[in-house]
Amino acid sequence: MKRVFTILAITGLLLFGAAPKAIAQDAAKTEQVADATESKTFHQELKQRFIEGGPFFMGIVLVCLILGLAIAIERIIYLNMATTNTKKLVSNLDDALASGGIEAAKEVCRNTKGPVASIFYQGLDRIEDEGIDAAEKAVVSYGGVQMGLLEKNISWLSLFIALAPMLGFMGTVIGMIGAFDSIEQAGDISPTVVAGGIKVALLTTVFGLVVAIILQIFYNYIISKVDSIVNSMEDASISLVDLMVKYKK
Image: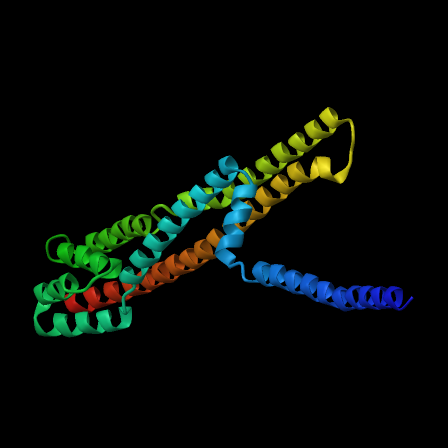
């Protein structure tokens, strides 16, 4: 009997002593899995979602993002370089006209970057031989040319903004068609059958909308920058005409 009680006691100790240990080990493994999931970087998560969304439509949307960002960055650099302090330029032209005449004013325009200085140069180049009216027409005409240069490639950016969500929605439709094909083949509407197609559909939609939102922010900034430069050009052109009239008197 003693031997039986001893065996029972040892078995109880093993069972009740090992259970908490096993539970602790399971909890430790669960925590390790959770930590591994939490430690996954944003880049890894984005890469995984991109692969799950399907390479074809996700790849096309990614190309739209890359091309759109390239155009946006090029326009932002160009517009920042085209920005001119028009008040300072008009003041320098006034001083140059008073001290050295048209040639001095043209030299100021040649040494100043930006579309405003180019417009001023075209007007000053015609005032001596053709008069104020011809100079004013040259300013207006060349102002239109400079506006075209400022707005160059912006239409492509708007195209990518419209194209990205449409491609995402197309991927959504194709994903839903795949989900219904799976239902038809399996003869069942269980979540596991349709989950894959619906997941692809949602991922393509989200990615397309994110690309459109990013490019739309850049597009609005570029448009506002162009409007600001155009307004400065128009105000400065009026000031230039006034300076030319004052010089001719």
